[in-house]
Image (cartoon, rainbow, N blue to C red; front, top):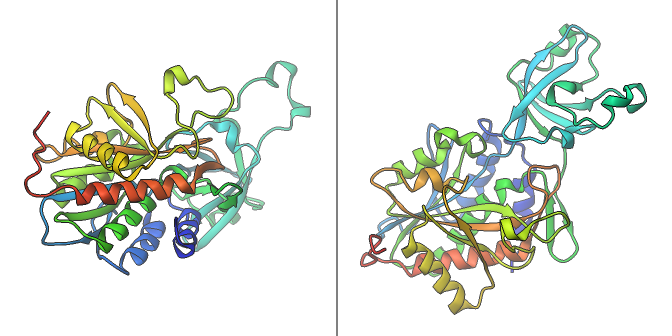
Length: 355
């Protein structure tokens, strides 16, 4: 199980604001922890890397993106109201009446998301979904000049909420996607380092995945590391709550273990290594299929450099891209154990071209 110190670190990591392109604060938290047992560095893209067994071969990259969805200031009007757009994929309904923590130049600024009260809406508008442009953020300013003393166009923000532990070893946070992946790859690296194999292993907290139509930080990071193999850790949709169609998404319950992905971009060699390790260690897992891309960092990593043998391990997540994403700490713990063991099973004789 995860130690108390690991859970304390996880909560600190989850609670540190860092939307895509503004990840420096959680990246510093991650590097500080990784530096206790690994060689740590960063790059111009903001990616953070931690390395153990530096002379080992082959080179394995463990990637989890550290950014979260957020908002960015587009306009401050003459009355001091702040108008925002999204960083990453939002359902604007979850923003209504939330508090926003802006990362201002002179410190954090708290605002509240406003919307016309239902009493003042026309009947035909009451059932319509809110758009981002229907909302504004009130920071308590009385005019534009007062607001500009605190914030500027281009400042980013996140929903102002703290992580909480729930019964049955579950944790809730706005930033589970995918700070939980950044946590898992570090925890896997820590466990690998306690009983290392032949491979050099580099855990990477990558940037800008939530806006990664261009490949995000992961593609840059994979090329710099010079990896021959990569395991990406991200979240996937838990399918154990109302309204989910398992025929479309598969069966991935909270607490059922990590999800091993099979599909077009997934290396069969790395997948078999993971599945074999899970079977031998009796770690429960489920399978997911991806006939095209995966909408994760794996899509950029597997075509980086001369091609990298890439696999994807997912953690079931309820309520994705909301203020209260929920995962099981048992699934997180099992994912870290599985990945550490998979890394131990790889050496210079491993043939990643076998298909």
